[in-house]
Image (cartoon, rainbow, N blue to C red):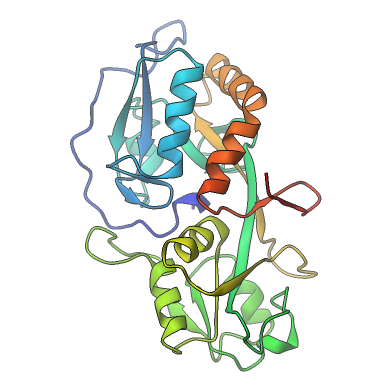
Length: 277
């Protein structure tokens, strides 16, 4: 599962700005003037067709820094088969956000690190909790998306008994994202807290002007890890392309961070300290 793509599902692929093959015989990208991106058409805050996601902004930055004249998208929903039908099919040459360690793609160096977060209303009795193990969460109605890593830790701490489970598979063309729905349910008093992938929680809390506290879950002592490095994904054969992207990341990290922080993405360094600029 591609962590940054959580929430966008069950969509039909649109007509892509397709070109023939992604690689030439010598391993070179076919059109050096176009950055061909594999992306979901409705997956805010990451990507959407109107170009408003932060991965859209990052794609524009990569295109600029690699001398491309434009960005072309191959749109496909983030369901099973996403990589097979986009990157592996040579319809596009880069996935802008991909969790490090998945063997379906070759990862660049990580360009950000984030975590799942605990979201609670300000002034709540739960405020101050900073782990899933905290006794303050016992018996509370906590929203969580099914089959995401926090559910395992919640199960170990007997929190699923009173949890509200939200579906992983939703069609965001016709319904709101689960992050947005959780925040609405919290405001309505239907849940006491939510556990979400940090970039989604940060973005929707800002968009909805939600009066909440967002706590990165980086102090878990047992169970699943909650923090992940996010990379760009390329084909295993694209070694030179990977080196080019690593150079872009290395030389433009401050600008990348600024884009992410503008979307209220919780950024963590390797020591679990939050990056704020």
